[in-house]
Length: 74
Image 1 (spheres, helix red, strand yellow):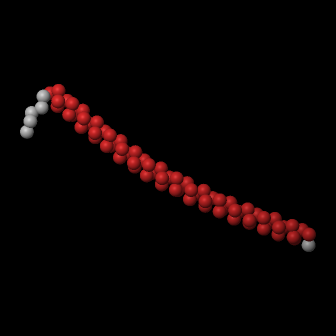
Image 2 (image 1 turned 180 degrees about the horizontal axis):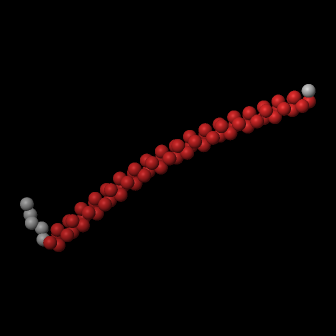
């Protein structure tokens, strides 16, 4: 085992701290990317569901209006 000079110890400590910081930052960024993908998927799913509900509502209204027109003319 070699004994490091104070200058080399400081350098080594800074290096280790930098590596730890970079590792954590990369890990958090990867987690964030995962959550962004999940959020996008939920948004797509919600949008599709709302579109289907909107279409069903419009069809129901059109049928209702068609029925009221038929009863008025009869």
